Image (cartoon, rainbow, N blue to C red; front, side):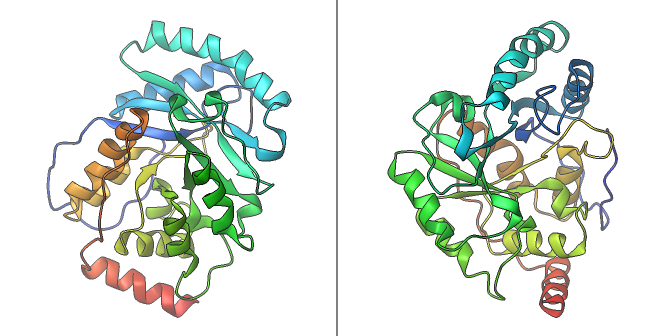
Length: 278
């Protein structure tokens, strides 16, 4: 598993929980994730060895083309991956879902195959890493249909104002927020890292996932995030973000509130850096 740089010194030797990773691209040959079955299986074994006991395979899909060739490829790839995992990593729980890009504001989630493990929850992202006008309305429409959108990696989006005023709108619309673990550790640069930490500090994050793409340069580990957060004294929050809440979602239960992170020195410094950079 590729090492991700972690800042700070560990303060505890907390026992890690069994992680659940709800955002990965390990379904082979479908999108820009795992290129083949062997790469997918190798990545899943690495994740399992690193303490991940449940993984959702969530290839990209566009809201404007829910039943096109990409979904057909996913349906074709799934049986072979499921069979190999059952044989080679029998204790790993493997689930299906999609990361659905809202290239149109209308998204019909009545088909349970589009949702995480057939639950009411679905991963969604905005088009081209930008925040569209009336973005909260698109999320509210999903909620009005009886489903819960999980907005993925919003720390990587462009178009925020200085106060991130749209974030409370997303939350009020009924959306949950998933941050990429690599964002917290600097994988996408200092600006994305600062925004991700700001969201944590404000108590706006419901779960953390890897967004693992089963490729050498996109093969992150949730273990590194656990080590980082628990080492800074945030073991309780890390447990909720990496294990408890993802598990609840797989059981079709609403996640628990993580709450605001206490403003310790490292978060204050990142907050100041963010303000200077905007």
